[in-house]
Length: 87
Image (cartoon, one colour):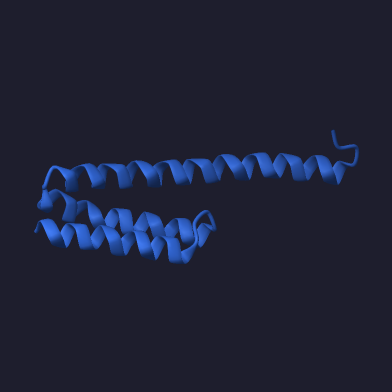
């Protein structure tokens, strides 16, 4: 356990930041899973409607630092290709 006040504070900050990051990533994964289930069901109209929300959420995670830019871009590209394939 930390003894210095600054170390104690940094531990508190880390715990808070971890919770926020977990919430962001969890929400993102939920949206991506919903989109993948729509793609699997060949529901192009609903998938196309949900795609901008997923894309926005991915880029928000990039700006918050919970996801790398190339990872988000790759995910967006793959999802877009799948939607295009079923439409």
